[in-house]
Image 1: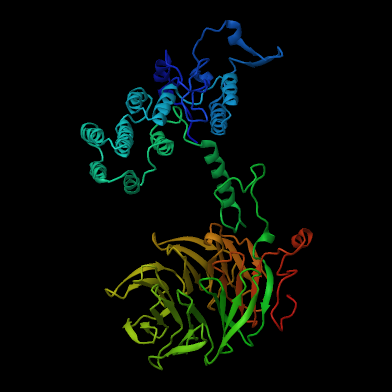
Image 2: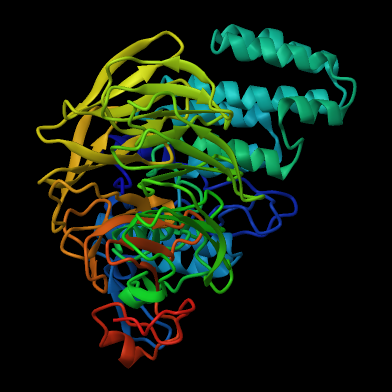
Length: 623
């Protein structure tokens, strides 16, 4: 937080203080020693101790020497010594509290606080300026700028502040129908500033507005009155040092920042951030318990009869698709309230098994790919359960990965035998790239760039429109799989013998190397997840699911329960507390928080036990 009142401002402040009262008297205003506006928005004066500086700025007054030495409380006891100067941070706190109390309308309390502490909320010249702006006295406000110029770190900012004042003055004249006066402001006051000529051209166009509503709509302006003037004052304040005028609602801003910082540092925070302060207690530090995190088995899906190689939630979070060595794809329906899954459809006929699945952007279609020796690709209509396309360009192909174009009308597919195709929904070949041995694919949001990891331990970007390609990521070991964050900025790689690596695609640098996971040469799929994709999850060859906070390389949770390699994990994109994992043990586990457990039971759990969880038909009690 910036210190209030730099040394270079002191001399100017003292010179301006002489004979200057902290505000001007309004005919309807009630005097307040803080010099700010009363709750009804009128300017008020400071008739006693107005403009008093903090002790570091104090000047002599007409009080006796005895009054300067010590304050006496009403009961006659000795108060704080006057010469016991407040530190800058103490002055800042008093000013922040005073401003907040003033915003609440507790002006008498503010007066007492300022008088007893010997502080002031803001410089007297700033108070005058504030009152004149709120009252719309533009000539006086412009005159106040000359006084404020000496207190500013950047005197050139006066031109920008003057421009904002005159712009408000111009708009208010137009709204009142005073076109000639508005034209005079535009020509004789705004234009000579020679500042932001582009904006002046826009302002001149408002002369053609037929009525006030048209003006407010085109100018995106609230109209003449306290609302627009307060907004103007907030903009003007940004050019003034905090020693002269506090930023608006500064205490609330600091409290919000503190709450947000605590939430960001909370390893298990997995809910939407509420920007308001009403939903939190300021009396306690923010903390989230592990039992609120998806660390507990809520359901075990046992319908597959062989190794489960892949799982993926739909984009709307209402379905989960799982692919298995048993040649089937099972689509599960997610109850968004109970977070319970039930079997919806079984898609059969994948002779080689299903090792990869991709939902279309609108979740209407699902593409299934097989292992290395599979030359076929299946495109299913999920609503009808019918096979729309079974694609096979050549028996020599290996179609093991697929990615949808964001337009939902095209997809790319490829494999390690050198095939790289772009096709439509009927499987018709639109484009091809020869000689690229593809391990994994991803389409970026620009609808042009396709990322492909290949057998050269790298990820390259391919543009099918202009047939250009470029290197983006280079690893030292094979990239077994990768996924990309929703915003397209980060890539999460599962690297053979190395584990999980996080890369920044824009800067092309490695950001994190996550620890703990066992990664050999099996294909394991990790994922981003949780609220704002703050978390990362991955399967592992040691039968566990590992979860990290994105900024921390050490795992925050190790989920046990599977009895063989965990091949894939998928985090529900809508329900941040729902996670799925697929394993060679033939099961799919659904992980969630432990909302039904007593506190003492939850604290004793270190594995996937859940009381009150749901289990699919044929499932045994979680182990």
